Length: 385
Image (cartoon, rainbow, N blue to C red):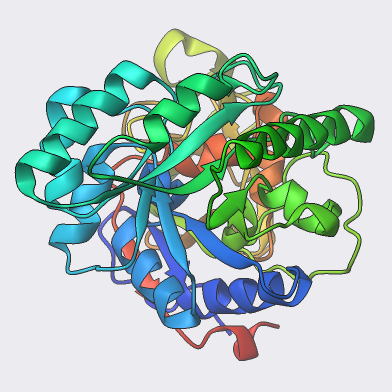
């Protein structure tokens, strides 16, 4: 079978396999503790995969919650007709609390003054707003420090009118490493703070702390809900030790471009801006319709390989804004104008790109440009060779 469902795209596209997304959700459900719900992370446009389409698919699969990073992301889902529960995991400017209440969005809360503004807005609109108290157990980012020093502030928030203290959560810092001691310390801090709040009569319907790595490695910490992120999209957290239970993940995203020009250049001819490549032999050059404005970093210049004709061909010269060039001299298969070029996909891991850049797979999928169309396909899994 072809690597792509349809080659009817202009210059570059990413193909999103919704059947792989469903498969991954079902695999995550298998390894998630019975009774724990699954919150699907669709922030950053579902890690570049397209938040609306992915959210609709995940809700159909049975996802209990969606979570995003910003009010804009939440409103986009609501205006697309998605009525599932949505949590904003981080900061929202109080100027936008009217939208939080209007659109029935759950809001992370970690500051009394902001909570009071949200309470006033909920009362003004005659509604209840669900909040999730954010605890900082060792990430050092957002949240009340979970050492007992903020218990009274949290208690005050949970008694404000118009607010439903529905959830409480924290975030693991190193669950994807061998440092289980730190992760356990975070979990103990989280549960200790919840015990203190319980003594004050404050309890929560949903307690959640496990991210993707936590889901895979710490089943005893799944509590009432887990937050599935990168694993939904078929990728492992980089460096994550082996999970407690085996899981079969399939990459959801594939990234393609096309050959748009081909020629053979003589010895001594330079290629691209800066003349950082000069041919030392007659060289078959393929110009490819993808560049750094699409998300293909200039760091891939002069060395990183893309796949064409089933073989890897190195980028020569600097990656340009809209194009890059490949050396196809040693490609055995016939390639020409309109030949498919694969950046990554089911048979070529995105982790190769991340490792080459010294970054993580999350960043690679997130930075693919908005001008690169997302093409949604389905029922591809059974056809994988």
